[in-house]
Length: 228
Image (cartoon, rainbow, N blue to C red; front, side, top):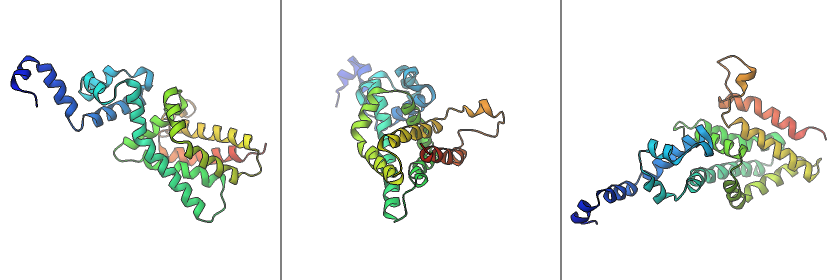
């Protein structure tokens, strides 16, 4: 506990200590950073923008996260674990059901958690789906390396499942098809409403998750199963 003399001599230190010790400060920073990263991307989002909108000073960000890169990784990692677990739970249920594995069923094990998050009433899940998609469409090297290290099980499980569902294709063919399929799915949920270029109606939006799924799934399945 800081004594009164220290408080009088160094009021800014008192303010910083009070700010970083608030139990909700880190969460507030993460929430604001997540929204800004979605809206502007990593490069265009400055720490100043984050601190202003989170109503904290730079010392609080440095105290909790250390750097912009570390903050971005923390924003991502707090949600990717539960998301991956949800996908693998869907995959487990499919494999244990005794049904024959199909490309469509496997695609849905990934789409269902995306759809669930997109409809999250708190909006946090929807933001994360867009952030995840935008991040993987863009190239954030440090985050990609962290994902490769921590979520290799996800890649191995889905690769094995698609090889079982598409035995008519060579391993390299399946790898390319998965690459394109997941790229399309990530891009579809990234919130980039390119659809407006082709459809002038204000009613139709590529940010409507149900509409995305309705048109996305058959397109992706067709690509996965198309003859060589």
